[in-house]
Amino acid sequence: MPAPPSRRSERGYSSGLGSPIGDPLARYEKLGAVDARPVDRLAHLALVSVHLRGVDAAVADLDRLRQRLDRGFRLTNNRLNFDQALSGIDASLEALNIDVLDLFLIHWPLPTVRDHVEPWKAFEKILAGGRVRSVGVSNFQIAHLQRILDECDIMPAVNQIEAHPYLTQTELVSFDDAHGIATEAWSPIGRGVVLDDEVLVRIGELHAKTAAQVTLIQRGSTIFPKSISPSRMRESFEIFDFELSGDEVRQIDALDRGERVGPDPDTFAMIPPG
Ligand SMILES: NC(=O)c1ccc[n+]([C@@H]2O[C@H](COP(=O)([O-])OP(=O)(O)OC[C@H]3O[C@@H](n4cnc5c(N)ncnc54)[C@H](OP(=O)(O)O)[C@@H]3O)[C@@H](O)[C@H]2O)c1
Image 1 (cartoon, rainbow, N blue to C red):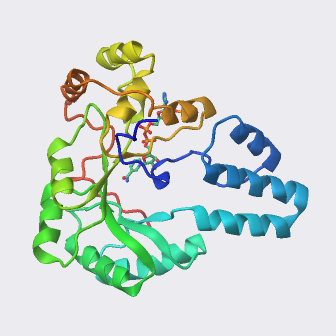
Image 2: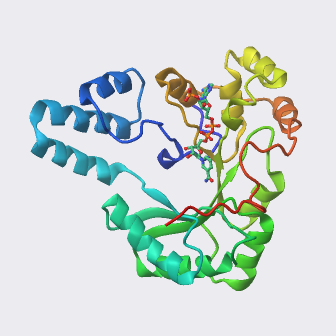
């Protein structure tokens, strides 16, 4: 099997399954329909063991599951200043009922509301405290990252940004690459808006793949598409058995229109209550 052309982590795929509420067996049936990752199979096991083997066995199974998962969390937008960001780790660990997070992100830069350098300095302190394994940002533009480079001690491990064929963010991804920041692409298929694109459909037909699969293999970043459909989840995993030609990559790159499906990080200013 050829080496995966993009940096995908287990953390990078959102199964869309949500929390394990409802009939465990019904959920098991749904999950059992897909070629799930090992970590999902372990989740099935735990859900089913509640039903068949009782709560104690399920707790043991879930503990095994917890040790397999990468746990990432984002600082909520209402934690604006240094102190609020610093205490954000306590709230997050408490909410997740765990002692250590794998990755903690500042969700939005909120440049019209606050100075994003302040929460980042709190994140440096959080990292030094050992209760997170890495810290990063989300939706940060080059100017936001440049200030961190100029005024802070460490750079984010990750920048989670909207990226898909209609918004390739080439310069930002290059900046991330140049500074050792892993780019994670949210909405990697543009919430479906790119799927009827004739270039993607045509290239897909040549490889017996869907436009979604062409879009996902095209991304050089970690991707995390979201789907509630088992067949689409399977489809999104089945992308490592084909390669695009250089010409096809150029055709897809040329689709960039700077078109967002989500908010613009330079103006986004939504602060949730609380
Ligand atoms: N950091 C941030 O600020 C931020 C912002 C927005 C989103 N995110 C994260 O990004 C992740 C994904 O983003 P997203 O849900 O906005 O966009 P997306 O993954 O690009 O698109 C999801 C939509 O595409 C459909 N879909 C998924 N796989 C498909 C396939 N193989 N073929 C056809 N359609 C498919 C889904 O429908 P079905 O469910 O019906 O299959 C759903 O309607 C989420 O986990 C979200 O939490 C992060």
